[in-house]
Image (cartoon, rainbow, N blue to C red; front, side, top):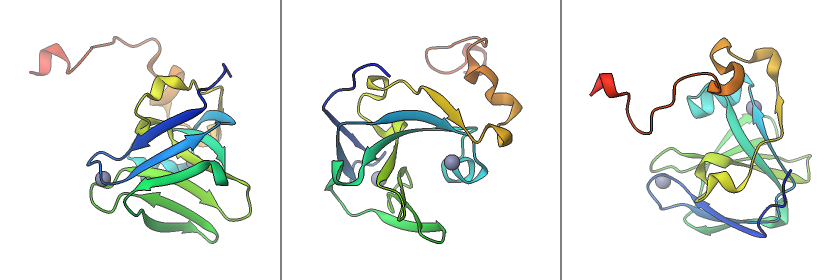
Length: 138
Ligand SMILES: [Zn+2]
Ligand SMILES: [Zn+2]
């Protein structure tokens, strides 16, 4: 992965929950069925940081235990998924899409591709790109 910025800030849709990352270890796409449900998306991009390098700077996250020892942190007000914290691992994973500058990190690999959806192939690389809404749907 390209050199990542030392400090990265992010937050939820409504702005009540804010966080800061110090030093990201890796970034990747997860195609597992639980990330799909948690995000409502075909796949979810994550950034991994050491647990002490993930700091909540505003608000208090709501927690859903998706498996024993696995905590999914989200905003209880607007529902944005924020972090994935597995007790037995040293790292916390944070949703790339909630960073203030998501393009600061580029995912380098995919995990759980055995459950990847057909629609995620190439992650849209070959599809038409529209800057905002599809022109024919307005
Ligand atoms: Zn929120
Ligand atoms: Zn996942």
